Each structure stands twice: as structure tokens, then as C-alpha cells.
Image 1 (cartoon, one colour):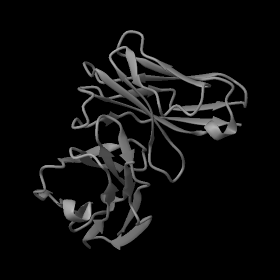
Image 2 (cartoon, rainbow over the protein chains, first blue to last red; image 1 turned 90 degrees about the vertical axis):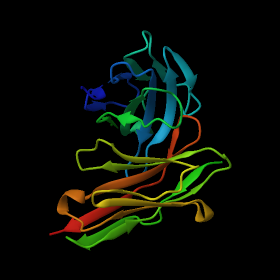
Image 3 (cartoon, rainbow over the protein chains, first blue to last red; image 1 turned 90 degrees about the horizontal axis):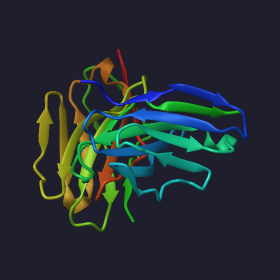
Length: 115
Length: 112
């Protein structure tokens, strides 16, 4: 079956602009996660959705970052007033359950570059 | 606080050599899960294995094997007879409830 997909694969934007990153999880997966991976680092947790609600958004760096999952499937990560420090690869993952024992399946990521 | 340490930043081996990637973790949870993922140059993280804290039995899958030791808080990964296709960045991750805590990764280069 289809894996996790993310669009766009690359996004270049100017400082101060607004961007939206989309994630389409594996069909039937109720849990969805966003991570951010900076160069040479491991992915860092941003937010976790169980169904439509954000169960944990403690990893969002500040209030410029926001994510939604209105129908419990596709999710959008929104970044306002982008800064050069936001440049990174944004990874989306999904799993069939939100329990820690379940492996997460990752998408290919969106590489965001803020100039 | 939870933490994962992968002290080896980069390892280079010649094809057919065995190589071990180290992973040391810290957690106060009594129930937790450990994972290894492979990130090839294409960038997509590929799941390799999951272990839970109650199961210290070592596991072998083809050329891959994993050694989990609670006494030393380690979950090491060995590739036997390495191949060029094994070249990638490998991440160890820890999970208590749902979110993963990743290490900084080890870049493995297998030279032909």
C-alpha cells in the first residue's frame, strides 16, 4: 500500500513569508506526528495528533508554528513569518496507534529553505 | 529526561567487514521501546527494528543483529558482511509513550 506522502518535497521561501506543508498519512493510521530534522541532527518531535486533535504540541518551537488535522487524515503544518532558522527538513510520520510500542512510518520529508 | 546518545558520528568500513553501531539511552520509565531506523541518501527514514524494555533477547535478521543490554542501557546494532547498499545514516530512537527521542545518528560509509 501507499506510504506516507508529503508535499511539497522542496520549498524555498523568503524570510517573513507564510508556508504550509502537507502530510498524507498511511490510510487508517490514527496517529500522526511531525518532526523537524536539522542538518546533521536526528529528528526532533514537534506535534502529535490522535485523530483530529493535537494530543501533544509541546515540541512546537513558538507560536509561529501551528498544525491541523481537521478530518483525522491529512495534516498541514503552518509556519507564519518564517525565519532563516526555520530552514530544515520537516518529517511527517504515522502509526496505527499512538502507543509508544508501535513503529512510526515516515514520509520523505519537505525540505524548507528560508532565504 | 529521556536521551539517546550515538557517540559515533561517522564510520567507514570496507565491504564485507562487520560493523557495530552503538546506542546508549537514558530514561526513568520502566516500560519503554527502542528502535533503529535507516536513512539512506534519499532521505526517507526506514524502520528496522523495535524492542521493548522487557525483552532483552537479542535478535538477528539476515545480516543484521541487535544486542539489547538493560544493565548498560545500550542497544547496539551490528551489520555482518557489510555491503555498499548499507551506506546510510542510522538512527537509534527511544519511546516511552508516543513520541520518539532520536540520537544524532551514525553515518556509515561502506567502501567497495
